[in-house]
Image (cartoon, helix red, strand yellow):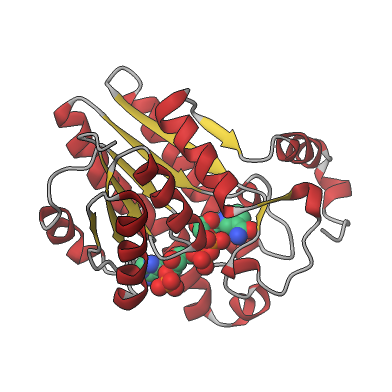
Amino acid sequence: MANDKFLLVLGGASDIGRATARRFAEAGWRIAIAGRDAAALQREADDIATRTGVKVATPALDILESEAFEGFIAGLDGLPDAVVSVIGLLGEQAKAEVDVAHASLILRSNFEGPALLLGLFAERFRARGEGVLVGVSSVAGDRGRASNYVYGAAKAGLTAFLSGLRNRLAATGVRVVTVKPGFVRTKMTAGMKLPPLLTAEPEEVAEAIYRASVVRPRDVIYVKPIWLIVMTIIGLIPEPIFKRLKL
Ligand SMILES: NC(=O)c1ccc[n+]([C@@H]2O[C@H](COP(=O)([O-])OP(=O)(O)OC[C@H]3O[C@@H](n4cnc5c(N)ncnc54)[C@H](OP(=O)(O)O)[C@@H]3O)[C@@H](O)[C@H]2O)c1
């Protein structure tokens, strides 16, 4: 059944983005899925519209082009009630250690771009007096590890940015949700051997986002709660020991 709510997904062609758009569409929300791949977005929009009957828009967005953000927002069919950013880039840690352009791309795709755009929506939500902002960060941002610290540092930046926004807007009707998935079976992790107990499906992430945004408001969620235990233990390891571990 259609309602008058409007969801914008930044990174709408990703596996988590598509699952999230579908979950909200099933609840009757009007949807916009934004991204770079117009053909993939249109395929997904047609699929969602056929399944649920809701209206789905596909605005173009490159998260590296911050000068276009004001125009992107102005071009939307109204100010969304909720914005979910799932944009991210794992990149290659080894390449990022020697190639400054690659390191910069990882930092900008995971941190600078999503933070700047969510920040612009935060201002508009604050002026309106309500709205939900959701940032998909990662457990990788909880502690830097040799195997992926450029990506992890970018996610740590996004986590801190969302925490600050939440703190600043706590007395308003604007809510900010930080989502920390562990492993998720998506295009990003294709080919990796993922431990089943620690791995979520995109639909589980989407359900967690929907619940934390709409059903039972939450500030920070670990999609699989076991990750909170894992990351708490990792966080408690003293640095002189941690620096010698291969994680
Ligand atoms: N999979 C995991 O294990 C896992 C774990 C923790 C957190 N996460 C986070 O979950 C989010 C979704 O990831 P996923 O696993 O669903 O992987 P994914 O399918 O690779 O999603 C990444 C999305 O970011 C988009 N993107 C990258 N650079 C962009 C740019 N410059 N402008 C616009 N869009 C851009 C990609 O668009 P294109 O399709 O155009 O490339 C894609 O839609 C990411 O933030 C990721 O860091 C994933």
